Image 1 (cartoon, rainbow, N blue to C red):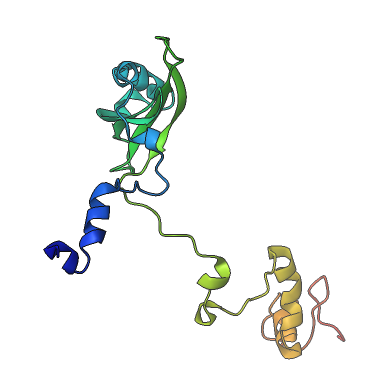
Image 2 (cartoon, helix red, strand yellow; image 1 turned 45 degrees about the vertical axis):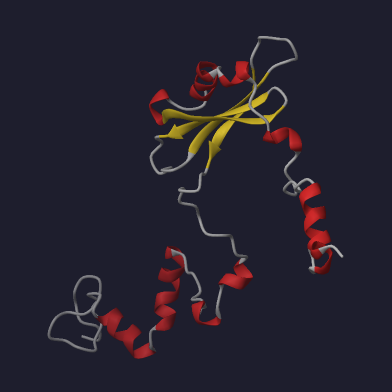
Length: 186
């Protein structure tokens, strides 16, 4: 008898050693290779392309050149743009097979792991809580407010306002004055 065959799990260990490790799901094999040497060296072309969308002062040091596929390289630059600390400018470069002409595919600004990002979006129906609601007051334009003011006053207040408007002489309450200043009824 073989001592290894008596141990539980021995054949499983041998099979595990013979099978290749599984690659990560969602990551194509071609993305794991080295970047194209010609495109990786085209840092100046990538920087010039990024300068076409932002001032040169907002572009920092070259951070990396990552392979995105066969003859497809992404160059990353530090962002010095105010409010975008930790973000990175990127330029995706490509070329045809056996060609030395660099083509710019895409430019932009990406967040990194150190970036400050906005919180995840939440629909308004989930954001608004019952305690957030406030009673709505009707909106009144300036002209409508003036027209509605006398209606809102009580009748006594309207009479007082009319008597204060200068239609009576001082010392003679209750009797209106004529246009020439003479008292009515005399």
